[in-house]
Image (cartoon, rainbow, N blue to C red; front, top):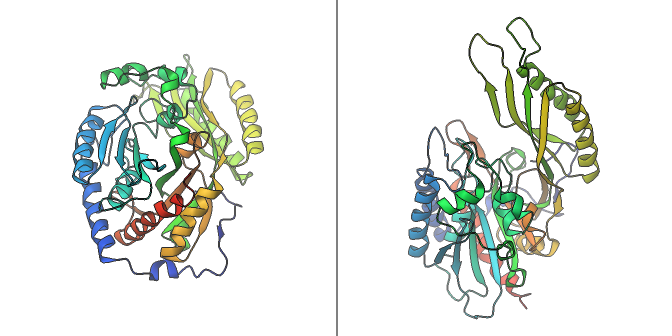
Length: 421
C-alpha cells in the first residue's frame, strides 16, 4: 500500500515495459507452474469457510506442517519446527563457515484469506533453490506460525518473539476461546524455552528477505511485476469495546451507533492527512438479534503511518476521542514505529532485479510485514510481487510474474556472498 502523497522511486532511465518484455527461462516457467499447483494444495489445509482459514497453532496448521515437511524433504531441504511452531527449512552451502541468508513468509492466514498471501514467501524460495548445487551461502526459509494475528489478536506475534520483543507479554495473549499463546504452544507440541533462547542469532545471518504480495493496485497501474520496500509504516492496534446496558430499540444511542461514530471520526481524520491509514477489521456485536438494539460492540482498529510524528499525533488525538465516549473501554495491544529496510541488503536485491528485469523500484508499504519486528535483529528488506484481485480467490499472482521472481531469487545468494565475512 502506498499512501496518498508518497512518491515511489524508480531508478532513472528505466523503461517500465521492459519488466514484462523479458522472457523467463523454460525452467523458471516450469517451476512457476509447479508453484501454482503447490499453492492450491496448501490452500486445502484450511479449517472452515471460503478461502483459506489457517490460524496459527491450529489443527489446520498442524496438518499443513506435515505436508510442508514432506515437500521440503522431497526438494532436498532439512526441515524442523522451532519452539514457537515456525517451520525452519534449510539447504547448506559448500563452505560450512558461510553465512546464512534467511527468506520467509507466514503460514497462517486471515479468516477466509487468499491463497497466495504469506505462503508465497515460503514456497517461492523453496522452489527457487530446489535444484541449486554448490550454494555460496546457506539458505534458510522460515514459515512464521503467526504472522497476521488472526488467532491471538496480536500483529506479527511470531516475528516479535523471534526478535525478543516483550516475550513475557506474548505468552499471555489470549485467543477467542480463552486459550493463551503459552498453552497453545504446549498443546501444539512446542516446549517454550527461556526468553533469551527465542531470539535469532544475529551473527549467523547475512540478512532476512521477506517475500509478500502487494494487495493493492499500484504495481498493476505501473505495469511492474515486482518492487522493493524501502520503508514500512508503523502500526498501532487498539482493542475497543463499547457497552450501553440501557440501550433499547427506541434509542439511537446504542453501542453500534457509538462504535460507528468512532469509524466516522477516523474517516474524516484520514481525509485530511496524507500519511495515515486505518483498518477496522474485526467486529463482534451482541446480542446481534433482530429486535434488540446492540448492547455491546467489540472491534479492533489499526492506525498506520510511515511518519513517526504523525503516528504520535494521531494516537494522542484518537485516545482523547475514545476517552470522551461514555461506555467505551480500549487497550493498545500492539505498537511499533515504522522502520527503514536495510539499504545494503535492499541494494543487493535491487541488483538481482536489474539483472533479470532492468529495474529497481522502491516504495513505502503499509502492510504488516515481519521486517517491522525483525529489522531490530537482522538486516531486513521486503520483495513485493504484483497481485491481481480475483472475485473468487482474492489476490492472485500470475505464473509469468512468479517465473520472473524465481529468476530474481536465484541471483541473490551470490550477490550476498560477496560480503560474507
